[in-house]
Length: 137
Image 1 (cartoon, helix red, strand yellow):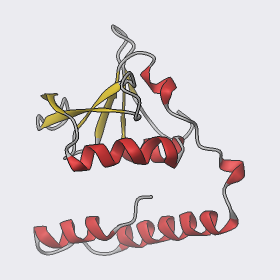
Image 2 (cartoon, helix red, strand yellow; image 1 turned 90 degrees about the vertical axis):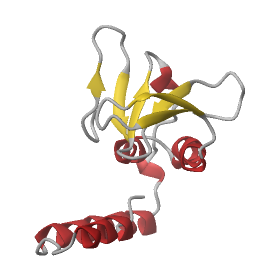
Image 3 (tube, helix red, strand yellow; image 1 turned 60 degrees about the horizontal axis):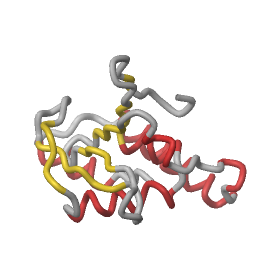
Image 4 (cartoon, one colour; image 1 turned 180 degrees about the vertical axis):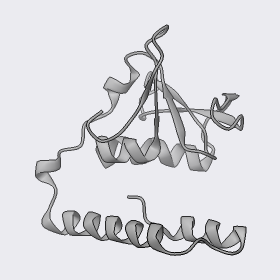
């Protein structure tokens, strides 16, 4: 995709993306409600994640009862869309973003670059703290 890499299953037409790519590609109105369902555990247990083998959770993309359901790994942020389900997501309108939103995005990029240039943490938990303090969206 224009904002990053996704995986395509040639057999079934399904696609896999991570949440960060979803946030860069689709509107907050389409990503945030379904991600809130994921972090609150509002779904049913699914198959193991193909990346980390952690159990995924199956959640609805939107509020209507007939909304498509996707499999999401809360650990590695892997999101699986069956064929044609990605079409239910509203694309992000980059032209409509305000200057403040663009400046905030630039600050996040600068912060990420500074983190990459800094020396690695000595303890495992310092890396986790650094990850959790990084704003992704």
